[in-house]
Length: 115
Ligand code: SF4
Image (tube, rainbow, N blue to C red; front, side, top):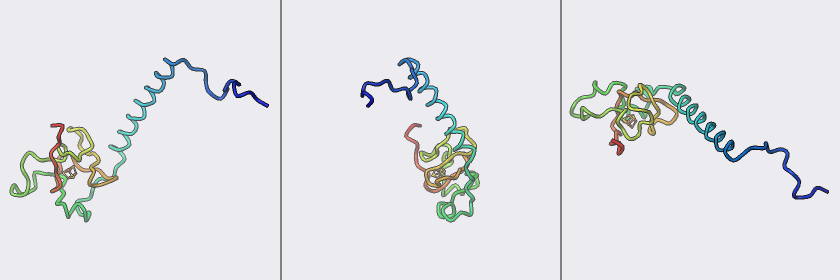
């Protein structure tokens, strides 16, 4: 019978410093891959999509009548836009699994508390 104090050979021998260095590098790599996957692999929202139509979504906010949209409101500065302000396309909380145009807009626009 094996003692409960037998060495665990399935674990690699690793110093604490090396463990944290490896874990940190893995976290950075995973974050980078995840951002790449969400930005590049999403299907762009179709303006004729029922949800898009219901919310008056358009790829080019400047085409919206001024009575409906304040001139400084774009997807890129909306709280639900999940990209950077200079991203052409990014995910949006309203359209799961799809990308909206940074220069787009819809009637669900919400102020970004970070700005
Ligand atoms: Fe654009 Fe915001 Fe509407 Fe999403 S919720 S489509 S980011 S304006």
